[in-house]
Length: 455
Image (tube, rainbow, N blue to C red; front, side):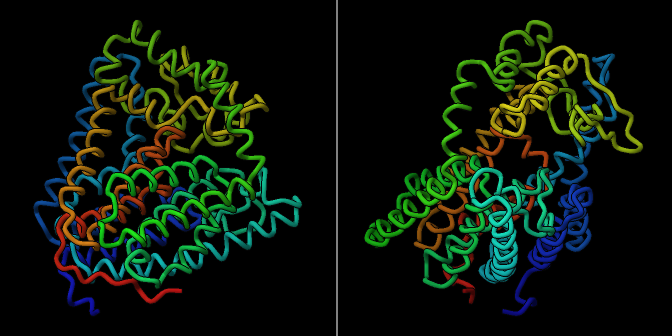
């Protein structure tokens, strides 16, 4: 199809998506933080729509108002960390500012799927090559060999040992969900999904494999395939279960360590368990307003807060403060989190495990914005799922709704593990894809959805 068949808004979205792909899959991690702002700025300028300008301005003003109110009533409020939170949470800007309805277009959908298919092929090929190199180094695909799989986010063959590996996994995960509807509706594109799934398994980010599998399974159950495709449903579920079982054999030792880590958490023996207990029992007694409105953006366990301490890059044992940013710690951080943060980084038992780190998005939103904001986030996801189900009329809409439902659950689940909601390089492409698929599921322009010509 020709670009001229798209509206101005849809053309801008396509341009935004391609530009964001280049930024979020690039090794320029600092620049990738700006991807949502650059995307929103381009979208507003390209569409010349006053509504988008007003909504973007409103988003910024609300954020500054929240910061201003907290700074007004808290004498030890850290303004640099609060301002930094605007950047770390910038993915929410495009999500809230740009309406979904105008993105409904089979033409736009197919054009973006072509891009997604190409990216999955490139990244999966590189990721599998990196995993193969790691295998020759370690003699196994298990243990830390998955750390080698980072795609173009860290294109070398020696692992970065940073967050590149989880970012690779989340981007591949969202991409596979975007390709799901087309693969369900026809046989084309399944080779691309298979190659991407293999790369995702070899990346060995266990929590992402679990979250993605559970999210897709729950979405299939919730939306229930229509009776006309009942036979195909069983075949797909059987294939899904077979694929999901593969990591348990390839990554046996990584999965075997999960029960022990979960057990330590449930017994209150891990840094994560301790901070959850403190945040829900002791902290409210010292900060009575915290459960309602939080301590303020960037003031406790968010990525912005951790970066603001000067200890995030390099870790608390070898801190590398950012230039031009004065390091500082809130009183709450010093009293409740700093000791656990240092202990988690220095303890060989769980220092490298994301499941035990004393910070993650659910905790950060609760402590910095309040329980009402966290509950509102979950409620927004629930409302979207209900609306998707009510909108289903055709097999095409059903396939789209299943993918979007899985993506929403996947995004929410990620918030329970690390501060993923503050990493645009990990979730922004997923948000763009979810907006596109949601628009086409809820506001279908036509049922003409076909798989792009991919392997």
